[in-house]
Image: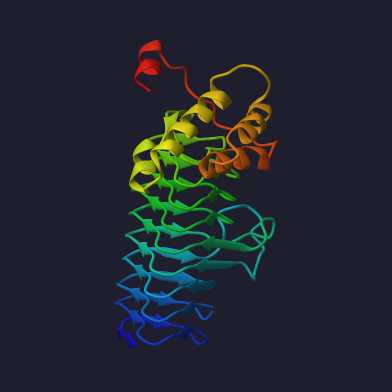
Length: 271
């Protein structure tokens, strides 16, 4: 364990083997740092913050503290961050709120670039990338493998499904399906994240099936999105990626699903 003489570590903080606390960092008495956690310098941990093994926190990041909402009375609110995360300069992550269950939860191997923010009660999975300046509103749910482009924003209570891609400068005010590629203000689906699917080794046949299901759900007009998703789930019952998408849509009928933007005939021919 290494603690720089200029750092402040309050009584009660729990520091495991190999933790490094850099210059001018502040660690609250409610913090729990697992083995190998590194606070490079000027990092601030406030309240009940738990950080998993080997996570690295860069200068001027502020983790924990009061949620950025009115009437924040939640003294037991927590922020739980998993293993092997990289939290870059000036990132802010709020703890949970009384209304939202009291916990903000971050998974493993995520990369938070400079000035990104995760609001209170967010649940973020594993292998997620928040590019510079990304803003996540409170109660957002970001599934595994999502990539959010620079300066994009997610409205509170929104869901983004696994391996979706959000283009830079996009505003997400509705739920984005797994494997979707959303862009624009307010973000609409521009199609599927085909590059991400190929990088993750999804079989070509499954990608073709997913594209066909996407067209059936978002480009046909018979019935509601939920009804079309239910039909797609039956038609492609043996394709896991289609099942991920349809289950996501059917999980919460009250939430609006990001619609597909209108495509030109030329785009349809090249798809």
